[in-house]
Length: 296
Image (cartoon, rainbow, N blue to C red; front, side, top):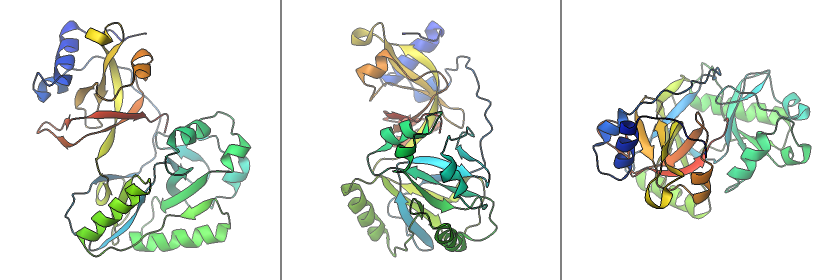
């Protein structure tokens, strides 16, 4: 396994933190040098975590799809990272001139296969015929969200393509109804819910108008180092050192399979992890590896 060189002190602190033996804030300060990505990412609205028990009054509720986010600027289709998506010509030609934000989706529990399909440098026609593009917003629009949803419905209808769909939105009156909807959806194989304030204008960045609600919250972070293992993991990966969007760093060792410890995600890769809460320093507690996100 090819490992990134880090100082003995940094490795020790990160591994001790992962075992819960040092304060979180110390692990957050472990910062080996890493390469930076230079891809220009599109401006997007990003969700915060919904707190159970909160009233959903004034919000529109939809399913949170476990797909690959895809942004259409009227000319090209891109991942959230800014990298181009190699979609078939017929797929791109059918999209409207209006910018769209949505998810490429194959079905519940199909993320790994979906990710493989959309990452091909040359699209496989038969595979793309199985995908849907689920549109949930109009980037740059000056209308409130409820009006944007109406425009999305009209655009999708005008396109006349069965694979291009508007994400269904509903209103739920109470916190208990939101919880019941989440429980039902997860039992059916869904991932969670999205809640978007109906009167909110579109604004890029982390928004107080957009929330995700899941049984356990998750988030993405960037791999900045491979930390060596000890004991049964000697000679292979012990933990991933991850950097959050805000700059905090933490070691993630829980949830890693033997295969990932032998061939870990490369430096710079985006991974998704689940967690229960955050420390006062903003570092996730009880974090567990979920998946590699790929270029999206």
